[in-house]
Amino acid sequence: MWAMIVKEFRQVRRDRRTLAMMIVLPVVLLVVFGYAASFDVSSIPAVVAGPQAARAPVHAPFQVVQRAPSEGAAWAQNELRDGHAAVAVVTGARPVVLIDGSQLFTAKAALAALDSASTTFSAGGGFAPSGQPASAPQVRVLYNPGLKTSYIMIPGLAGVVLVFVGIIITSLGVVRERQTGTLEQLAVMPLRPRDVFLGKIVPYFAVAAADLAIVLAVGVALFGVPFRGSYAVFALGALLFLFVTLGIGVLISSVSENQGQAIQMAFMFTLPQVLLSGLIFPLSSIAAGVRWISYILPLTYFNEISRGVMLRAEPIGPLWPPLLFLALLGLVVMTLAMLRFRSYLGPAGSGGGRGGPATAPGAAGAPDPAAAAVAESR
Image 1 (tube, rainbow, N blue to C red):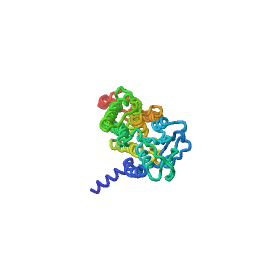
Image 2 (image 1 turned 60 degrees about the vertical axis):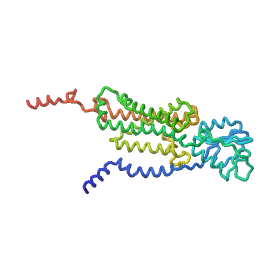
Image 3 (image 1 turned 180 degrees about the horizontal axis):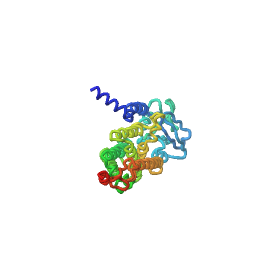
Image 4 (image 1 turned 180 degrees about the vertical axis):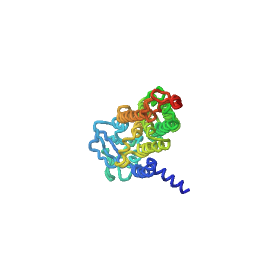
């Protein structure tokens, strides 16, 4: 038994990648998610419109990002639709407060601030300390009036499905074929590496698209989640996001020697996207030292697209930054994945690739075993 224990310790010590994940990864996850796991919203971006917008006092936790005295309720609602603010104040005889219900925790924080005993609404249309003359505002929650959790989770879960299929399933499938020797057989076939690469990812692309359609259909039919925007804009965002996840899956498979390593690396890519993308915790509540990670995760931008299109009917114009980021990231990831895949396959018959086949007996430039045996007998 002691010999087996010593052997296992030596094996773990030699597998430095697994050893690092066993020791370093838990510490990193504890530090990162310890700062990220917060539902507290300390700052709520707000816009103010109407005749008294220039002098309307607004106090914490509301932070004015724009004042427009010449604009009205339509402009304020468009600002919420396009994601420029979470709260819009329209001043006038009776102030109106519009709240974006698609930002669930921010909306709840705004309602709590409005209902608190220490904050009232001034007659001029702003938030003022209690004790001043005030008129009760008309509060309206848009896009998610009931503040239902399913309204924000279903669009985000659609992205999680694409992450699961694109990263985890794709990486496992490619590594499994490499372990069974299928990719080495493909290397000797008259196929270009690009054809093999596309042939490998197209089935996963189709499965992910079918899963996405099923999730959306069930979410709309069973949970009553609305789909108010353009199907074409949503499909464009899903297409770009899926290219990113498929590329990451192929990259993981190209650096993993077995399915165990592929699962470990896929887990490292998947868990931060679920917890740091704004799917569960609002981005504004994540510590600044960790928040930068959120802005390099593709799921962060897909959540912005899916919630904007499904809940707020956001047009393609305000969504061009996340769409552009996904397009550029997809181009980079797909290029790297294709280069890694090509270097693994290598040119057929050259033996230069990682999986390049050895020169077959009888081929040009290779010794013929039968001829060598005859020569030796003579």
